[in-house]
Image (cartoon, rainbow, N blue to C red; front, side):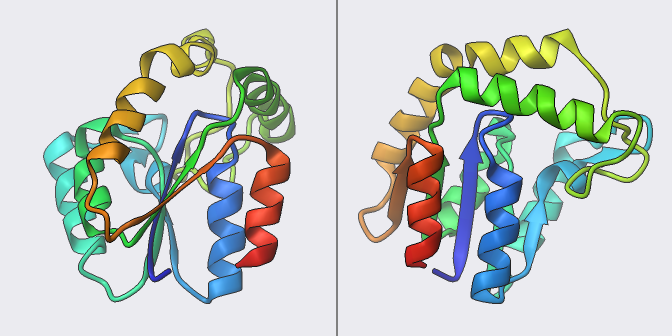
Length: 167
């Protein structure tokens, strides 16, 4: 496990797991949200997202967390390990709400500087619909990957904890 991608719904625990894995494996962790959002929630253009990711995946070791479906292939193709947090949407919505309460009017550690946590109904709708709109495409992408990649699908917080303990 030297080049690890973490994907999953908002609130699934990607950033937390990425941080914990990075500490345990002594590998630098990169949160795409922190790289792709400028102050006041201004997103960087897709061509810049591609450049950033192409540079990151050239490194010898890395952990990258985030979805960004339009550029996901860059990470999936370069990774040796893909972890999909396929956590139930009720848990994800609850965690996203809890995160908003914890970081309200502050920038959380895995977010771009100057992007204060806020309530966005569209984000909660995206999290709620993720299992129907995004999950099938991700599972299909994961099936298409080369067999030399390790694909790990974790479906509960307990499975995530067990995985982390075994690393």
